[in-house]
Amino acid sequence: MRNHLVHVYTDIDFDVLWKTAVEDLPPLISQLETILSTEDTLS
Image (cartoon, rainbow, N blue to C red; front, top):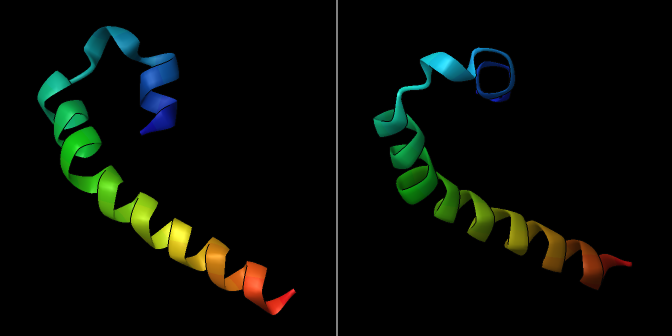
């Protein structure tokens, strides 16, 4: 997706972009926070 946003920005499907930001990123952020907090306790 990054490549498309950076290089083909004139042909972005904003519905897909919005869906990704609203539906896909929050669970990913939550998972990453869990992983990072687990790594902090292991150090």
